[in-house]
Length: 341
Image (cartoon, rainbow, N blue to C red; front, side, top):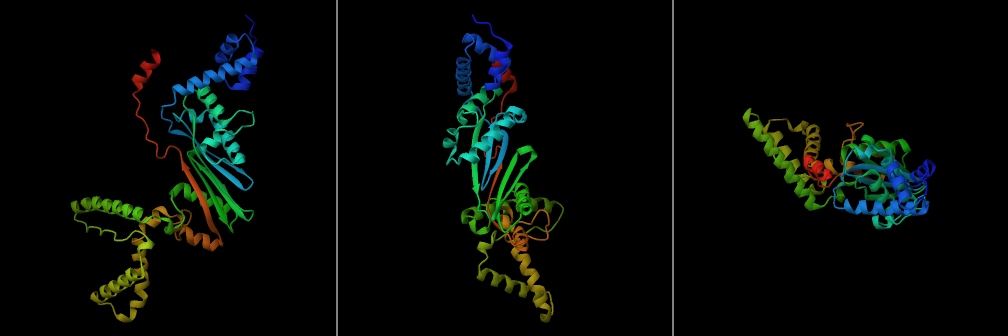
């Protein structure tokens, strides 16, 4: 049996990221042959990865990398948030995101076949990471935003990478693009403008909002407060000319009933009409970024802010780690028992 030296163990660890004991064991198993030891660790990593394949990985980090006119946003998942702070995991996120930005894959399957700087594929990198770190590590998704030379990227990561945003703006500077990315991180819009909202989605969200109003009214009744009215509309898409004309007539009738002099109606009606529009575009305000109050100056909407800047939002992508993944509730005691078998 060949004598395994500390230098060999160190080299194998540097080349594979394996732990000291795993590296030494691999070298012992193959009688000190470095190439075979690497292959041994890869095979061992694949076996570990297969065992963890059905486990839920809903923690992790987003990654952002800009390569010229291409910006990549990734979500890479681990099983626990503790592992997502691991230096190896953090470096993996950086390396994978850079590789994707430069490789321009069409989907996750293609991304896994890209080669990284060390010559390994992304697929092998994730197998090795799963084996080395000890948790299921996966590339869940990625987005590639592209721009022209006269456009600007804005990037922002919040809470250590739990949320990542890329914006593409036209006619804006880098600061404006970043500020908008920060707004999107905080407010979580789904589309740029209300025109992109599906009619069924608007109806569904309006029903949810009215359900919330019903719940609030139950509380109001207990303290004899006036109940809040239901929202009739949720988006500017629903505010047709006929709807707005009727609203104006209703306001006039209200002013007449209140005994307001007709000569001052023209000063009152615009404000009441704006209030009607604001009240009946709540779905837009929640989900369409241009309709949202700008988080850094709520006296104007994002659309108004961009107009003042002479800028246009072309595209954006926002990822939040784990969104949409149903997290498995683990029995910790049972998990410990399983590990002790």
